[in-house]
Length: 120
Image 1 (cartoon, one colour):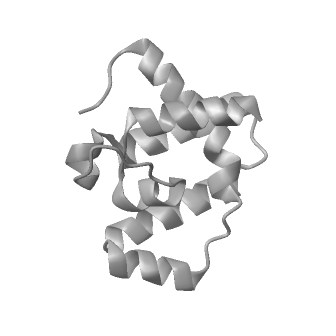
Image 2 (image 1 turned 90 degrees about the vertical axis):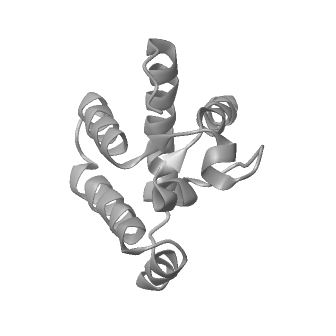
Image 3 (image 1 turned 180 degrees about the horizontal axis):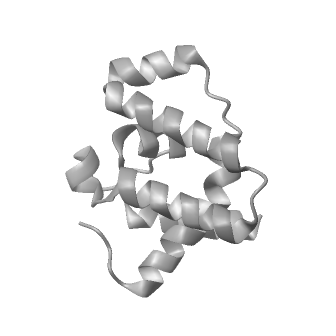
């Protein structure tokens, strides 16, 4: 289910912008990409590759333009879903790479990561 509340969208966009360096710095090797494809599927691998390409090609853009690109990417590639529906667990904390691989994330995960990033 996509979120339509402005506050939730702001939280999500903030997470995505703050997480950009985290996921971008992963420098994901072809070996890791092979594992992603084996564990999830070829579409998971493509999402991660597309994310790396987006980051690499746009790293020098102004922050507002990066935010717009990140928003477009995640609106196209990641669904916002409850833990129980996504992971079959009541409470699961996905890593940024898991989020990209599975193509889904919970608002709780995003919210908690924003809080921890803002505290550091």
